[in-house]
Image (cartoon, rainbow, N blue to C red; front, top):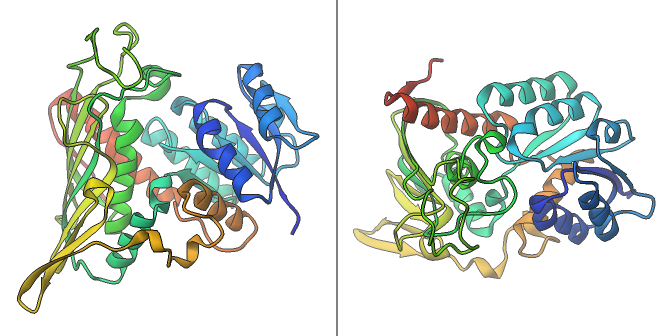
Length: 360
């Protein structure tokens, strides 16, 4: 089968740490175009991952003039929307990094463009492709948990504030840990519940540790003057059907109870959690409580064949298969926009001190 031709817009950390290595590992895709505002980054990416005739650009609109099957948008959050919209209207299929957009209005423009053009749009929520997530989703879809009416979405770090790039820049990113890692935990939770109709959202946002100087941070001390986003945020979400979700997100919390991109679900028949990086299913059988811990290292997920144990490679396989007309994407923009709406509601609620209510 002929290789797909792809372009990368944004050759920074997420492109180098996730997308380009996964594309290379999967195979079947030629990276023929690289774009970055810092041309040296694009040149470096071309040298490491590019096809022999790959081109380098500073202006993404010039890249979009090429004959490409798909484009990866790996830029700061602020530019996700307009680059994705332009790429879709240029006839390209798009994988955009998470979160979908900096706010719900910009996310809506992306969704509208995908519908107008008929091109594929998916968002980079790689947490769905982990073996534990895949197994839990199958259990939920099979009704093992029953009606899930309470969930907790966790993205908690003790002292691991990203000090590189624009993570601490509110203008570029739209927020801190809530929009960065909280978005993964919320996406995973909503997906497993298959529940995308929030009713009321209440949120709190904290800037308690931003000004610390001796931080004990995993990646070195942050610059207090540049740390303009929150260090922690928490949301209380009531869905239209009455289900409740707690969302906890922090880069720096004084706690030993840390876990990232994990969910806990409580249903009428059983419950599940991902504590200590293991999946546990709990319930009652024959009048006795039980806890099951599936052996997820033994394979058994057909969808994973050919991708090893790397969720990032699995993510690329699903996207490129969809571009070839072989199946659908797992992360649909109609789902991702709900994540953005809830995150936005938490920020808005924190500013006003009042709940945000959705009308349908």
